[in-house]
Amino acid sequence: ALVFSRDRFAIGEVNESGISLPDVERESYPADEIEDAVVSYDDKYIVFVTSDSADMAFYQQIRIWDIANEKWQRLEDNLSVKIKKDSFDIGRSSNKIVYYTENGTIDTMDFEKGELLCSITYGQSDSLEISFINTDQYLITYSDNINLTLWDVTEGKMLMEEETGTEFIGHIYVDGSSKFFGIKNSFMGVNDAGISTQELKVYSLEESGRFYHFADIPYGYASFEAEEFFCAGGHGCYYGDFLDYKTLENQAEKILGDEKLSLVEKRKYYISE
Image (tube, rainbow, N blue to C red):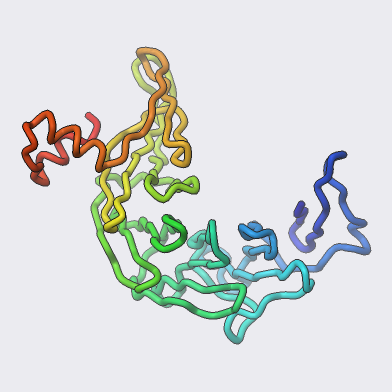
């Protein structure tokens, strides 16, 4: 268990009796301006997000703590890296971190080895949402140009880009799935039944490296890992399973007499009204 304040952090143990915390005065570690912290997938490292003293409004610093060796991990030749504010993600099945730099690149680093794996030239943007997907091979990004982009970080290349049609993207959701992801609309609305709505756009990801928008969930819950959703609306609540894009394509082609679908037809059959 990790406990932290603005200038210190401590590591406790989770046992049958609950959480055992150390003596904060004697067994905690000093740190500067901690804003957030995330533990790596293997529980060996802590990724700390700290304020950038030179420009707190637009930038942050990333530092990595090696739990077993009780020391800060070196990231190439430095103990920290400077990133655009809130523009980073850590691997869900590897000790990788990806972040958007002040120089306009999207960098992927193996923080266990402290080595830079890939640097993608992106350009300048006020903000960039970033999320790993598909065992940390692919990267989903969304920026203020309202484009959703899929990258292969192992090869450092863009696979697909599509305009979302909305400027109100609040967050990218992956939920440990390699086949689905979602983007949440940050705009809160109210439907005719008086129920608050915050739309989640659901995308299906193919192995070929292409994604398709195929469902909208106006208000409810989606588990991409379990491939199921629950939705509450003006006509009651309902529950269902996700079907991946290939399954939907096969069903549609059966309805059409085994005809292959054009791009226009794909959009017609798969995007929710």
